[in-house]
Amino acid sequence: MEGLRGLMDGDPQWIGDYRLLSRLGIGGMGRVYLARSEGGRTVAVKLVKTELAAEEEFRDRFRAEVAAARRVGGRWTAPVLDADTEAEIPWVATGYIAGPGLNEVVGGGYGRTGLHGPLPEHSLRHLAYGLSCALIDIHGVGLVHRDLKPSNVLLTIDGPRVIDFGIARALDAVGEQTQTTLGTVVGSPSFMSPEQVQGLWVGPAADVFCLGTVLAYAAIGRSPFGDVASGVHAVMFRIAQEEPELTAVPDGPVRDLIRACLAKNPEARPTPQEILSRLGPVNDDGTPSPWLPAALLARLGRHAVQLLDTDTPPGGHPPWRTARSGERGPEHAAPAVPARPPHAAAPVWPATGEPGGAAADSGDPRTAALQSPPARNTTAAAPDGPSAPAGPSDRPAAGHPAGGAPGRRRRTFALAAVAAVGAAAALAVPLLSGG
Figure 1 (cartoon, helix red, strand yellow):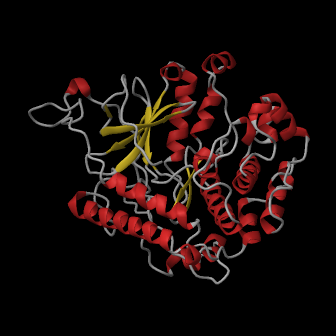
Figure 2 (cartoon, rainbow, N blue to C red):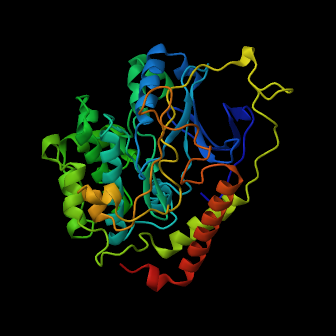
C-alpha cells in the first residue's frame, strides 16, 4: 500500500486510453496496473494473460461477465468503467480504490505481519455490513462472486470495497487441461465454499460462506479451516466435512454470525439481507463514526498524499492517435465496447449525499443500518437505449465533479482532507478508537 513499484520491463505504457503508472500485482487472470485516464481519473486496469486470451471459450465468458459486471452499482464495489473484450489481449478497467487489502491489514499465515493485525469487533461489524451490501448489489444483477477472499476486499475510510466480482467465473470456461497448465484455480483454497470444493453448483449462498470465512480471518488472522501451508487437500477436506475452528473469535454476535454463514448446507445460511437485519445499526449511538483503528486511518491518509504526488509519466497520446489530428486512424480503429457503466458508481473517498430521497424512503435495510448518506449514481440516456449508462467516467456530469479541471481540484481537495483526517487520527487514538 505504501509504495508504488513502477512499471517493469515488458509492461506496456498504454492500455486503451489509459496511461500506466505502476504495476499493482499479478493474479490468476493476469497483470493489474495503476493507470490514469486522459481526464485525470485514477483507475486499475487488468490485462488478461496471453494464454487465456487464446482460449475462445474463456473469451466468450469474459465478454459476458464484463457486460454483467458493468451493471453492478452501489458504493461497496469497484465500478467497471471501461473494457475491450475484443482486443488481441482483452482488458478491463475499474475504479481504483485507494486502500489496502484486508490481507495486508490483518496479515497472518506464512509468517506475514499485517499493518494492524486482527480487527476489533466494532470494525468487524462494519466489515460484515459492507460485504453484505456488496453481495446484495452483485447478486442483484445475477452474478456470483466465487472468489471472495481477503485480497479482494479493500479497506477505505468509509467502509470496505469488493473487487473482481463476477470476473473469476470466466475462468470456468477454460478446459481442465488449460487450468492445470496455467495454475489457474477458480477460488482460493482457504476461502472456498463446500460447493466449490465438491464441484457442485455454486450459487449466491457460496458467497455467504466465503463472507463468513473472511470475517473469521479478520477476527483471528487466519482461515478457520487452516492454512494451505498444511496442504491444500487437507484444507479442502476441512471445508467440506469439518466444523470451523472459531474458539479464538471473541464471543458475541459476530461469532454467532460467522458460525451461521459457515453452515455446510447452503439453504441453512443467512442471506445478505438477513445478515443486515442481524447486525442492526452499525453504530450503537446511531451516528457515523470511524470504523477502523486510528493508526490504520493515518496510513490511509499518507497513501492519499502519495497518490496526489504521483505524476503521470510523459508519453504523449495513446498509440492509436495520429500525430496531426489526435483522432483515431482507420488502421487503429478499436472494436465497439458495450454500453458504458454508471458514472463514478463507487467513489474512493466519502461522497457528499443528500439526506432523504428515494433511498431513504425505500425501506432498504441497508439504508436503515447505515446512518451516513450513500453515494449517488448518475445515468443518462444513450444510443443503446433509455437505460444505457452515461459516457466515459472521466467526463463531467451534472451534479458530480468527475472530470476536467474543476473536478480534479475538488477531488484533490477531498483527498487532501482525508489525509488531514488520517494524520489527526494518529493523535486522537482514544477518541477514534471508540464505538
